[in-house]
Image 1 (cartoon, rainbow, N blue to C red):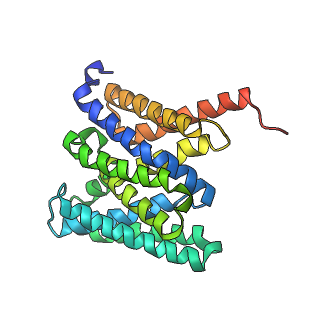
Image 2: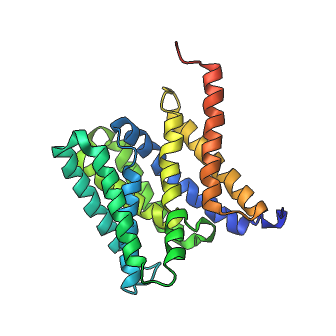
Length: 255
């Protein structure tokens, strides 16, 4: 146990990054669950990851705009493919999303097979390096998320089909580069799933659960020197389980 690990200069930017991701992912998570395409974020995140790996292989600076462009273009290609598949193969869409995820993950492993640091690179892509977020990188991300949220809430009823997939792809691509694939999935699905049966203050509770998970996870990770991304995923899940149990105790489901 090391209380000196509770360094606000490190944990602060990481928490801000988590809050930024939650700001877009909680409402999108509710929409994803309503549409029944739970694993879309894993698929799109993995496709974006292939773009990031490809950009690295082309020796683009990892925090430069060129990587962002390549990753976003790759994710948008995957999103457009899913929009087309939904139009013609709606009944099989969830299975096709799973296939896209497996294909993208396999391509990523193939691309990294000749990289001597491929295993570490893949781990960073999946679990993320949220503790080492650069505060300066959060500013353009915050601006982009603000624009996406404005579009999302102003034109909510019209966000279907291609527009939904494109907004989703752009958002997830930025999130993967901040926090990794696993945390993107946890931020999108776990809080949204927990509050789905609520009718009032659904998003507010979803945001609260996500933020609590990030705060607890960051503190536990810092104190006990444990993998931050994995601990936050577990913290979000446990916080949501406790909330769901309490909610069910107060408002039990009708039998």
